[in-house]
Image (cartoon, rainbow, N blue to C red; front, top):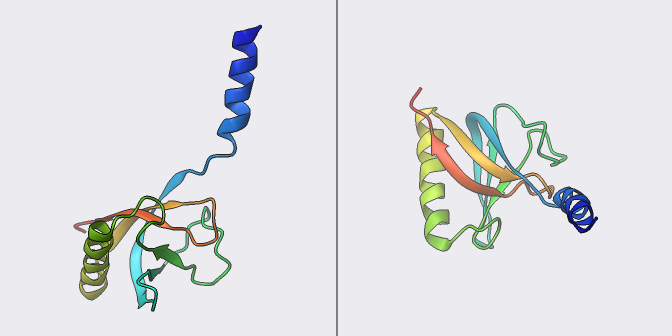
Length: 110
């Protein structure tokens, strides 16, 4: 019985956790915000992002979704490079908030 209660508790608690969702697209805009965060907009939106804008805003900032200062600087440089070169980015973002906070970025070759 104890195992059943623990298993059911695990299933119920699992529903409250956010997931890092993958999204791949070409960068449409990059915005730097005054508080140090930046915003990416893509050519295509993710159905998992709850941002109400069109195109959607995907935020990246220090302390959000486990992002460190060094990682944020590197991600900003990669986003600008992908934007300038017309390359696609693959991002992981938190789908639990309307900020769709990015955790990692990968620039794709083609």
